[in-house]
Length: 223
Image (cartoon, rainbow, N blue to C red; front, side, top):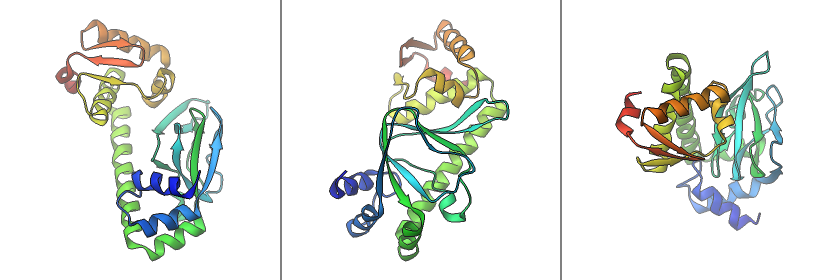
């Protein structure tokens, strides 16, 4: 990826949007592009965090594994979204695992070079704080959903989230396979299939592959 394309990607990203061009150019200058095949590990929980990543192509899931081998997806990241950034500040190991869901590319930001830039650039520090605050709110909502809602409520909440994210209330497109969605919602694929069927039988949704029609949006909100 050429530097000009890298700078363009950074300017559109959640983390660096709005930063001045000279600072974007400096950021682009410290990045390294890394490519990953489908289902390839990017980093593991407990490994030294020598930098963080920003998705340039494809999708990446960040997840935890329970002692019995059960996977809990924490987040799925798409183009322009950073991941693995928290350990950059405290020097601790990665707190979770990251794997590419599709053939992917990511920009890697080495920790020493990025810390030097952020120390000299207050606007960059403010951008990082905004993203970390948003990420904290997302995790708070996820924890509340997993601990307080039954699976139908979790699925309804996720569909509403997708509707808001995709800017429409009549239908949404699932951005990850249903097996991965089950992990994100803390359930099994079999249970998720039954819940999809149940919500369809109630007339709340209509499922057509990855396309989900939201037939009664307000009722989904109540769920």
